[in-house]
Length: 502
Image 1 (cartoon, rainbow, N blue to C red):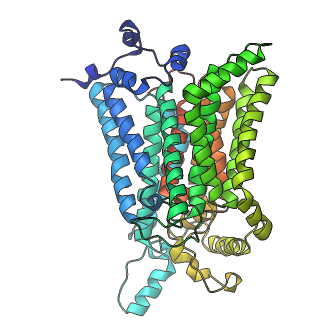
Image 2: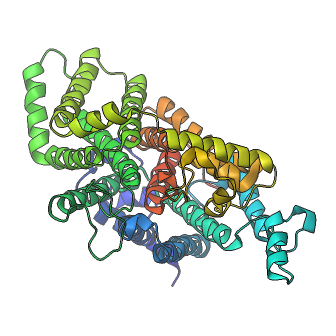
Image 3: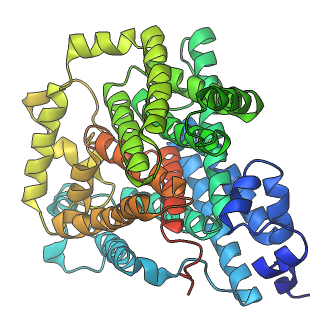
């Protein structure tokens, strides 16, 4: 039996009394009621893949934020397998990709060149002059031939490539599945709830287990809130992503539920209270838990990057909405009161830490200087993608002292350039930057169903800024969640009335 009969076209859906999910009115009407069941009727195969994808995102933070080899292995099988199943479904049904690869020709090309260069770096067939000198030094010490490569650690580069490919698979799957506007919003709702769940769990661990993580051997973080993550700064980025998503969904709900009637303020207040009692309370509770967990991390970079992302979200939202000035003020006042109120109760530690430590870390600045010198030593070839932990000890000096282990540069951009070299590292960063720019463009231009694009743009600002001072984007749970948001955002950049399929 052909899988073609498992899908229902938009026209067939209308003839059978099902909602047309590309219709904005139907989209708003069925936003929160039995959405998954209706999607299952319309396209069971893609809906099952979507549920599996969401389950993968829910699993990703469980094993110490996905920052361990077993988690890399599971994710490295799960997400590519889902992509394979999706592509087989496309092949056997004779359908087209909802979003053509031609829409992403430039970033796809840059990404492919970066991946090809990683293969070259790990190859043992490169000419001897291109191989890093450490392999010759190893041969001298061992007094036997050692096969060299550009990468100083081929194993670490291969593992980093697996993680990079896993993130790319998450992006591709979210991109294709989220072309359906209702499914894109379901993905946002799922991410909001998943992050809130881990935030609540983190609060429980901080309150009753002094921040330790049951079942896992994780280093002590001094009681700071980190949920299931090894590092509290990484969890700050993760919870920040969830907070941005939750704020977006909350404002979208009230925008649909509270009428734009002028001169009837009491009626608007009544509708606001009604919407809060029916569905809004879940989003408000979700946002509150996530915000408290974020502040509990005491992460200066994470909190400030999230604040910047929230500000960007409002700026992008109000730049495109033709709404009355009073309504904009109402929305800003509502969210500001909620954020300030929560910060007043739980933000004293953040303020205290900024006051005592400032916003600058002298050790990190010294590390950045060391890494920059290392990059300039081999600006074209690089040391091997993901090989920072092996390279840094070669250049470490007294500027950061002898104590402590630095296995990350605490600056993702510098670490990418160190590993891939300036040319191919810039290609990888440029590929992501092109996609982010597309989301910002869609966030400003779209008049309907713009929430995913706005969220993706704000989330990109969050992770992009925090990546300047930390390595959260290199933690797989953060990377996969961000890729899912980015894929959903790109999928909704263009109107559903415009065909962008292949």
